[in-house]
Length: 218
Image 1 (tube, helix red, strand yellow):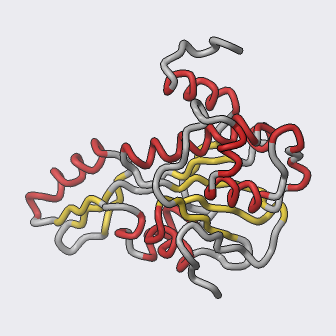
Image 2 (cartoon, one colour; image 1 turned 45 degrees about the horizontal axis):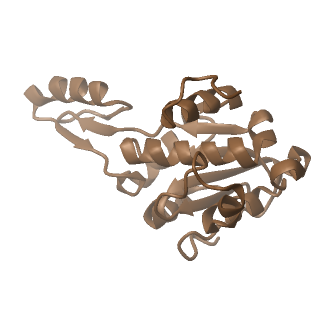
C-alpha cells in the first residue's frame, strides 16, 4: 500500500468505479494521515497545497491550468467544461475533508466553486459530499473519550469533565487526530458524517462569497 507521494500528488486507489472514493484534504500532512487509514483498494487521496485560485474571479483557462485543479480534473476523469460527462467518472463519490476551521471552510468553498464553473455535471450527478470532521475530544478520568463536532459541543463536554479532572483537547488539523478516530469519524463510510452538496447550494455560496445577491446573474 502506498501511503503518500509528492505534495499535491494523487494517492490513487487500486480500483475505480461507483464504489471508489476520492478525498480532497488540506496539505501534505493531512494527506499522509488519511492515506494511512484509508482503504487502498477503493479510496484515493488528493492533498491541496495552499489555497487554489478562486473560480469567481479567475479566467476559465487559467483555472484549468492550475496544477491542483488540473490534477483534480484528471483524477475524476469526466472531462471539463462542455465536454464534462459524469459517465466517465473514475470515482463514485468525491469527498471534501477539510480542517474544521475558517481556512478549511474557505478551501472547501474554492473547490466547490471550481466544480460549479468547470465540472458542473459532476455536481449535478450528486457525488460531491462534505465530511464533518471532529472538532476535539474530551476524556473524563477513568471514562471514555467523547468527541465533539463543534465549538459549543466541545466547550460543553469540557465543562462537564473538568470537575472530574478530565482532559480536553482541540484538534489542530486532521494530522492531529489519532488514527482510530480519524478512520471512524472521517474516512470509514459506515461511521463518518457527511453532507451532500448540490449545484444550487454552491451557486448561493458563490454569490455570497462574491458579494452578489443569491440568484443575481442567473
